[in-house]
Image (cartoon, rainbow over all chains, first blue to last red; front, side, top):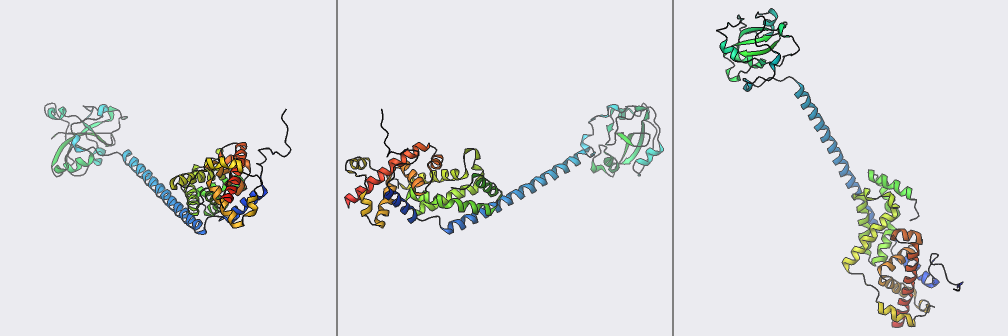
Length: 203
Length: 190
């Protein structure tokens, strides 16, 4: 059986210490410098201040940039939702006038229609005759920005007008801006209130 | 090290937000112990200053590096200081391990009474002791620096050194024995 030495100490309580060694170690601790010099603390405080000032600046700039990006995105989205004029280059392309009849039921100029069309040279003509409209009929109507596919076909009319190129271009007809001064003969599909829905250049 | 961990965590939280007062408070709490630990480990004021500075620079640059689940803020800071000190000592080759033959030869003629301590003058004793502490191998020097010089509890030192309190106790026992032997040998030489 192992004898228990009353002088021995539990290692967890502490290693056997010589009081003189303990005193000497305490003396050594006391004689050493107790902390970092004050300049170090001041320097670190400056670094801290600068670091956070820079961080705050970066945060502000990023928030500003984010806000600008959002504003730009919203602006672009609102621009994109506006009805835009068709580019003149797409003269031969017919995007979606499937609901627009090739031949309107009646070809009769409507008073309102005249009003809505641009003022210069609103010369209403009779509907194209079979022989006369061969060239025109070969071409297809091009939908204008105001085109509403919900309007029934029997409420639409074809009106032939002569207008300067600039007016046609402004309405979205496939006319080059270079030919702004030249006059064109065009068929417009108009609703009963005179809103032009589609256009077809005749001459 | 006798600060409440919650208080320290709150200070660190404020520090992250850029509160300079919180930084100053945390610095005041820990700069002394960290500096002294590095000083006792390296025996060099410049190294101790550099370690202290680096610890707080890291804290400024990356306060989110602290994970509260891994222990108190103090342990985290001491952990950084410990690693930095080790690295610097290795770099400057100041780490001079105790010569084993010297230790072995000392065993035979060593008297546990340590009469030598009473015979040395105070300044001589401190100088010898400083050298003796610096000559201890790193694991022993760490426990002497923490438990004897910083008067930290075994449990706290064990938490810092990531070992059990029993290991701390046994290392300390061994370190003290080495110190006594070293001092008695100095006297013999003298």
